[in-house]
Amino acid sequence: NAGVTQTPKFRVLKTGQSMTLLCAQDMNHEYMYWYRQDPGMGLRLIHYSVGEGTTAKGEVPDGYNVSRLKKQNFLLGLESAAPSQTSVYFCASTNPYALADADTQYFGPGTRLTVL
Amino acid sequence: LAKTTQPISMDSYEGQEVNITCSHNNIATNDYITWYQQFPSQGPRFIIQGYKTKVTNEVASLFIPADRKSSTLSLPRVSLSDTAVYYCLPTLSSGSARQLTFGSGTQLTVLP
Image 1 (spheres, rainbow over the protein chains, first blue to last red):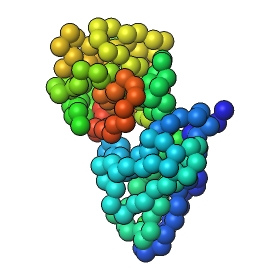
Image 2 (cartoon, each protein chain N blue to C red):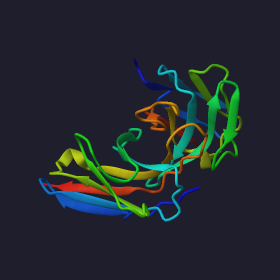
Image 3 (cartoon, helix red, strand yellow):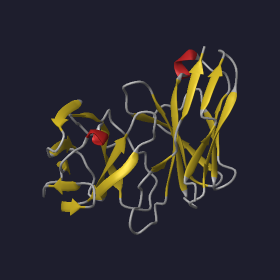
């Protein structure tokens, strides 16, 4: 049981390039989230998904797109990277129907992205 | 979205008890309070969750007064390894989708 994994761990992009971050969870969780965390700041929600095939915007969705084609995977895409998107990206998942820890978020290790 | 307020930073010494208070004036009736811990270069991890009064687990206690407008995370006998950022978060008990808003958290520094 690996929990939540993220690929890649580090990436450097040039302005205008595109890339996709992959989040995978093996806990059969319904909900998945993408956050970004800038230095010295808390986490800000980018997009989230409440089930396979559904996504919704969070607090800071501009410049990002997401897809949830399979329940266990949640992809975050940057179509045209900008230096303002330099950040650490965290993925999380929850099981909202769990009796003991409903809505407790399980986080991945993060992806450190630098856009030059 | 429910908004929380926490101290930006706290210092403590090894072996002391640390209490971190979070205010959440507009918490919803169905919300629990969840606390997370984050070490540098890692994602946050769950510490403790409660609804009212007191909850205790192997690492912490959580005190929530009757009006539920605040909560206090208590860490007994902290060690250097407890140096981290701590976040409090109103959390819906189950079912509905919601946006979970992390504030800036409290940076706890444990000194030798």
